[in-house]
Length: 452
Image 1 (cartoon, rainbow, N blue to C red):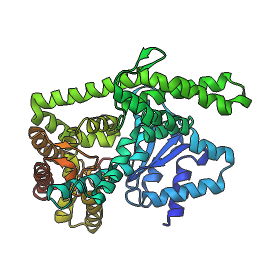
Image 2 (image 1 turned 90 degrees about the vertical axis):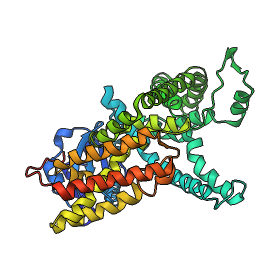
Image 3 (image 1 turned 45 degrees about the horizontal axis):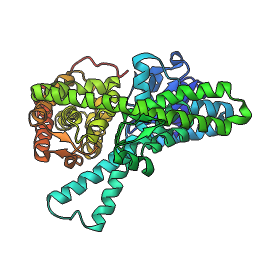
Image 4 (image 1 turned 180 degrees about the horizontal axis):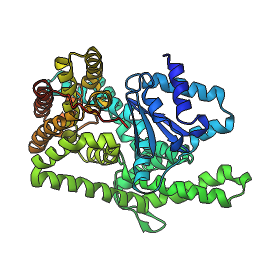
């Protein structure tokens, strides 16, 4: 079946284009925000070519496709442009459909960070490679080539408030450029210079000296408040004045409030979470790592792992993150499951699926094809992943391994972790353990579970 036919079928089975509020993609999934999820024909979607499974999480109907997801996404967007009215197209692109409560929060977090993951991972990998070159004295920090490459790798993290301001504003359905400028205001050289002097006030109110580069929580709070404030302004300001009055008033109000209130509060939240993680690791790093490594796969399946992304980025800004170092061991356990299938199974279809999903997992850390193609259908493997992931996570927790630059859990991403050798050893042990369980004890659970 061609990508176009797959796209047409998916559109029809989710209730038509008019039922799609928003559509985005990540490394392996199409993420639909629908007007009415009751219109979805789940069984038909699961039977579509390339579809590995479906998940409902974070207010989204997610279709797991794997490495071909970008091709299917492009075809859906082409069909949207051809076959929908301008009004429907605007609805598809701009309506947020955000739900309330905890589910709504996870929906917002995932929708905000998904567009940034690629550039975060790419920059993190470049930083990891540079660290590796420095480790083996293959390059010098004073070398101009190193300085240029280092600047490239640092840029996305330094200017994260701007990117997050844009992305979060888009997710909340407000002016993305105002959102970006709110983030940029915190990094403006003049303001950064004032902060460096230490004695700064605004209208007589003293500002707390905070470096907002690489920060997450301050801009998150600021944009959330701005989203409410913009709607209020649009409601009361005449349309003929909205073009310049709404941006001006928004910036004049939100930016100072961010510097006075949202920024310090968000920084305190980030520091409190980071200190809690450090405290937890200090009490029993091995136990914390074993719990995270053992259960992280379940967070991925339920879509709850997105709640950790802002915490991880905040920890990176503070010097290093232990959460991904421990929880990420589940990815190597999943690779071990695929390797075990490849070595044990006599089924050609399973061997092909295992081999094709193992390669991208090893190179890039994208493991959804393994999760939904091999693990979820064969529930016995969850036990193996929990044990293997707990072993790897426990090792990293005991030795206080941290992720020092953003990278997915993969063998190419190993230079992003410190101590690197400990992480490498724990990754190999985790992978081999999971593969051993499959080879020795099998995967046949007789009954399979559905992937929804």
